Length: 523
Image 1 (cartoon, rainbow, N blue to C red):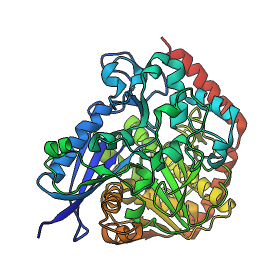
Image 2: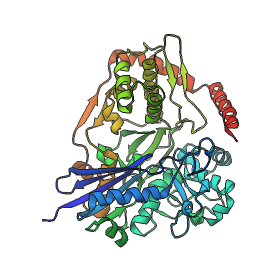
Image 3: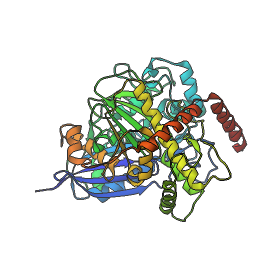
Image 4: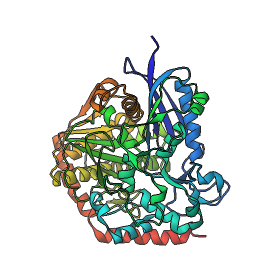
């Protein structure tokens, strides 16, 4: 009997990863990762540094990664379905035929993909928010600078000639699906969460002139965008129906792989940034400060409420890179975690705000920055590192509290990612700060496996997401239970964190520092 496979693709901030899943056994049998050739671009090739808050990528890096991964995993194999998770919102301008404008105008910054962490459209986001509109009702009344509408407005205002040349303004995940299948197919998840599309109302009107002509109606999660094209089959050697599922936001695509398939489940995907997804069968009004909600965009037949922290793993990575103790990053983390684990809660006399990359929830403000309070001549590097760990937990707790205040029952809390599996100190601190049990799925490459499950749905290999999760997802979970004494200390520290986070004068000072710093960086 010919063995059948699924392929899941996980396109993250710095690299892409793929997994090969055996349909019959449900096991991962291979994986392959490719770093993007140009990485995160803060300058153009052979060009000067870009202005502050800019973060671009080259769409051709995605093609290069796809060819390498699909060839490595799928050559001469019977592939039933291919799923794709992609970091978002990362839109790019392209011609009506799908050619990225960066190929045509390599020295134009606005011709490239604006990566999710591109925060330079804050002014456009604020202008859209000031105008308001019913399309913001499911997004807390405000738009993020990270999202598609703000980035389209920045492109149209700052590079009008390029905007006129733009035939499609499209999320990079949707663009890659287009390249793989030869058919332009938009994802409901990208459209709803990042471009404020609503069933029956379409995309918001009057935000950016001509934007509606550059977008297309989306399809719900699990839909097939078509089979892998003949050209890609020749390039990769893949056989079988190879149905390609519509793309899904990377932090959302993980849900079925980690058990996030039921009402009352809160799932945290802890990566470079962190995303928290609350699932429900019934619609509830959006809690104050939560980013957005959509139906059928992440999984079928569930409402999914989205929220998150703009910085998470990248905050810790910044610290160990800036204050290294060893030459190797992994060893730096090991040393810092080991020493920080020896500190009791509150023993470092420090409190931090987790805004190193701005604040996503509840303020939607990329112009905010981190804060360390309590520094003395007795402060140690390990003490600061622990304060950063704790601040990430406080930020996550504040999101949970918004859901609770909104009347959402939370029956299960799941934390996923390599960071959750590889940093038990972080997860234990989060359990202590949350004062509730936290589950970590024991599964490798959960995001890519989640994408493979979407591919299985699109190919008809499984009937629904619970079935797909049971066959291909995590089969064991590690539970972290809160320590009562630590939880008591953290309850006091969290109240101080909440007071700092709510201090408008601090935010005013942060904005002033940003303005002064940005002026000094201008040529």
